[in-house]
Image (cartoon, rainbow, N blue to C red; front, side, top):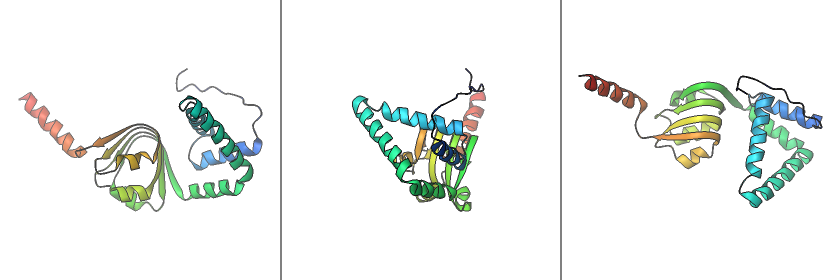
Length: 186
């Protein structure tokens, strides 16, 4: 089945209140219910498959904790949803370049979701990035300057396929390629 074809699935036995909260959270995150469900299923399967028996124990405990959280902590869930209201969700973009000015101009934290290629400019430092970008989810490729700490940056990422650490500025690389092409032609 191609990614453009959509198939409808019926799931019986869902808790109506849980589904309502789930779908409202998806909307607040800028995702469709289907996209959010796919991510939830992917995260649960990843947890369960995490190194055999240990993963099963963690998965069972995570399921218990999630169940307890949903049953006993509607207040905490509402607080989590409120914190989402204080963020800007940017999603569904092929390529996005983010500069220091872009981050300084925004008055809330940003969640970046479902972006194919993300480029963080060299003028962005870790302090500003950490302050303004809450999380990065479902991105195929991210290019960051080498002064951004990789592991701290990676903690903000979920389901990111590739993080590239650049040692040169993009503009310099482009101009070098142009001058190399000119000298090759001569």
